[in-house]
Length: 150
Image 1 (cartoon, rainbow, N blue to C red):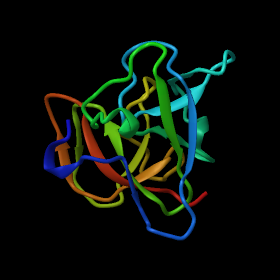
Image 2 (cartoon, rainbow, N blue to C red; image 1 turned 180 degrees about the vertical axis):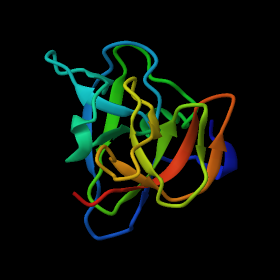
Image 3 (tube, rainbow, N blue to C red; image 1 turned 90 degrees about the vertical axis):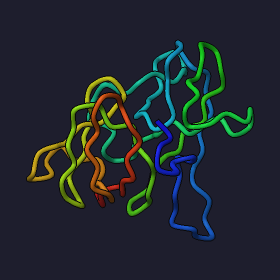
């Protein structure tokens, strides 16, 4: 998954304001860095299955405090570090296998399981815009993306 030098989730821009980092336990195993996540009623992070995260999407970050990489999944009860992505910020997001991103600024939306897929051309469901051209084949992959200005 960390192919092509994708060793971090948050990419910037480098401003004087640090990204908003949220911490909460993982509800279950399998949360991966780059996933769209949300808090459940118990206050635990789970994959966000809806596109309602357009206003302030939270992306699971690599667990840098435990010296984990973008390839390491969180396990049940681990402290998950989520980045609340602001307009214009770049992150690597986890795109579902089978999505061929053939142009820059391709809209990306929730795939319903925490991963992303190509969205509608009219941007009606877009959360991010791709910042690279990549054919995601075989398995899910991290894709550089920019938060759509809401």
